[in-house]
Image (cartoon, rainbow, N blue to C red; front, side):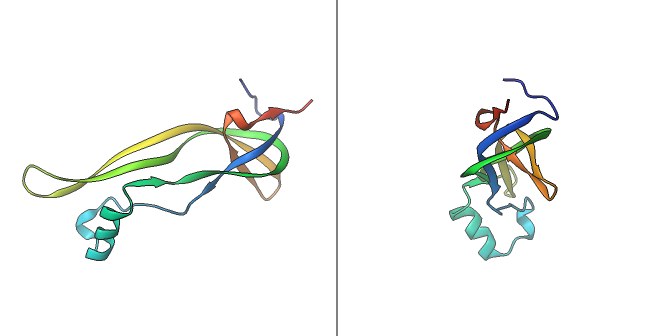
Length: 114
C-alpha cells in the first residue's frame, strides 16, 4: 500500500527503542563489557513493536531503520578480534500525532482515515 505525505491515518502499534547499542571498537572495551557482549548480546533488538490505544495522526516521513541485528566476535588472520555485524533494516513511516513528536510505524499497521 502506498502512503503520501500529509495523509491522515490511524494505528494501534508503533516502534519503541530498547535503548541498546554496541561499541564496534572491541580493543577499547574493558573485560567486563567484552564478556557481556560475548554472552548476552548475540542477538540485539534495537526497536520493539508495542501495542497501545488507537492513535490518529498525519504521515510526515518515511525512513529505513535498523530494527535488530546479530553480532559475532571473530578472530582475524593475525590474531586480532573484530566485530561482525549482520543487521536487519526495515521501512517505517513517521506519523505525527501532536506537536511534541512523532511515532515510528510499520506500513502494515497503518490504516487510512476517511
